[in-house]
Length: 117
Image (cartoon, rainbow, N blue to C red; front, side, top):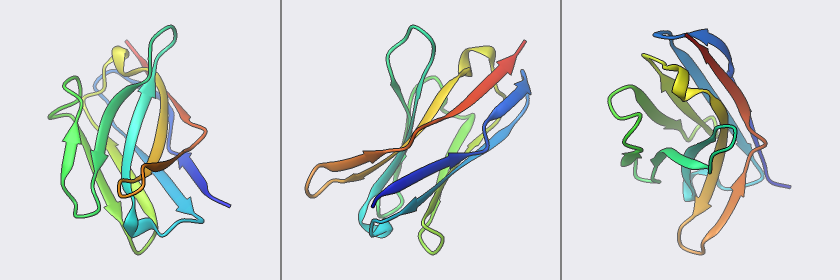
């Protein structure tokens, strides 16, 4: 059974930092590109960041220079370091695992990040 379990969300003041973690089980982690997406109330889910199996990264325009995605294949975990947080970063953050060879993907249940002004 595949599980993606996010953690690290919470309430933070604007300008602060948080680190999200996503622990994966039930997949061969190194085969999967990993990503973080977010969905704010009343808005569509949007890309935050992805990291490929080889380590190349991609970021949404709104988080470039503030967020950093990384992965630890030994721990089956992907991280999102978030800095200089803004109230508009408030959202539920979801972890995604995608096996690009087949298109198969999985989602976590999300973790809420709230940034107060």
